[in-house]
Image (cartoon, rainbow, N blue to C red):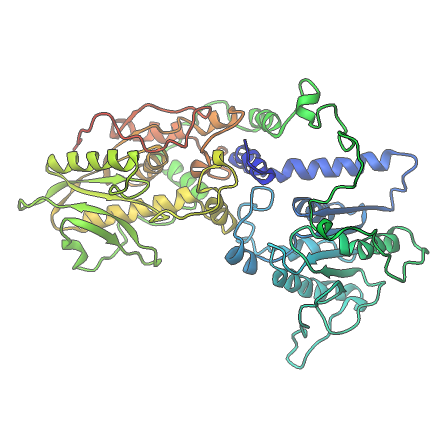
Amino acid sequence: MATRPTGEHGEASLQPMLLGDTVDRYMLWDAVRGIDYLTSLPQVDSKRIGAFGCSGGGAITALLGAVDPRLAATAIACYITNFDTLLPALGAQEGEQSMPNFITSGLDLPDWVELRAPRPTAVVATYSDMFPFAGARSSVIEARRFYSIFDRNNAGSPSGTGSPEVPPTPAGVALNADTTNQIPPIAALQFITGPGRHGALAPLMGYIVEFFIRNLKPGTDASHPILPPTVSAGAMGSQWTPADLPSGALQVTPTGQVATSYPNSETVFTLNRKRAAKILPPSSRRLTQQKLAEAIREATKASVRPGTSIFDPALLVAKSGDFTLPSSTGIDLHGDLFVPSSPGRHPAVILLVPDSINGNTPIAHSNKLRFESLAAAGNIVLAITPRPSPPGTDDMKSPILGPFYLLSLRADLVGRTLVGMRIDDVAYITDYLASRPDVDPAQITATGSGHMGLVLLHAAALDPRLKHISVDDVLTSYRSLIDAAMPIGAPEDIVPGVLPHYDIPDLVQSLGPRLTETDLLQGTDDLSQSSTPLATLEHRP
């Protein structure tokens, strides 16, 4: 299903996002309940509970340490970096590590560490990790300034400019390689580093164990590093497994998974569906046009106001052929333009497509036929791809998440959405056509399929200049995605927090006779086949 664990996290994150939640809601709550359980055991000292995690476990450990003050000591491995270094190098990760509006809210990964202050925290990093070490070091430098407010033992070495001196990256295992001064072992903030790639923690285990002994067993002599067990050279990464373990030794349920071991087990899907039933209105809200427009802009973050664009006069008389529509944001939109040779004003059609109509795919071929049919009917036709234009090549966390999942996470982090940016593109495209001297601005229509059709539903609800839109193979409602056990190809359509504001039927109701829609899809359908063209092409003035 998911190719790798982060793909499963991504899939589980989609439905909570529709309610304005994240999958972390459930992961973090499980961790909090784990502490609840430990504190209930008579043999556990509730004042001496620690948490340690690596990679995705490091992410949840960071969140848990920040929000639950019962943790006496926390070590976060191979997760803490900063977005300044992460986004250019590795990019957004997955739903567990990418919360909508996180960066826009002024937050960054060191904030999880700073929320722990003044409680003991160790940031653990490896020099060749995919999570950039430079970002981890910068985050510790920032957090050290915060921790030093509580205890000067945490302070780094200042330089003459007031900025900390950053030593070169060590060659081997090191403590506190973010500063040139000596940080005492009793300091609450420790930076444990060593060579290797993601998860290569074996050489660091002595220092990690020492950190926990010092902070969870006061009075124990942990003044010297504890040597880790001897391991082979090939066991230095995250794939090492102790020898001679019988099959199933690490399983705590019969099958190794809760969902397949116990009947009626809850999952993120079932819990989220129950939550939706409690917090969402039972049916469509019948919003006024103004309220719906406000709700769309609030949820999608679409910001372009129709009719406000200004274009180069030479662009307004462009002739048939390859076409590039430059924007003030520096992102060019690419497509194909057809202009009839006859004089006067003509109807215009926006053909919103996921990729060039001149490509070699079945979708491209079908859209090319659609383009030619609309042109033969005497229309000015602009077949154009909204952002990203042309499409990018982001890594797929899972085939069922599709190629735009990580790009949508980048948008979410900075308070935007892929749907909203595409709505802005349609408004800009409409501005262009309405500004051309050979276009009848009272006869601008649009057509699109799948994900592009959903964008047009939003755009037309905001822009009355689109006199009619034709869409097909479009998701019938976001609510139907809540009831899909495993959505396929959904990320391009996801708008975080949309359902408390509106649903797709609200868009349809607002458009009335301006809309023709066919072959609607439920959330349980495969949404990845997103641009099967309309079976019948008909220009509607």
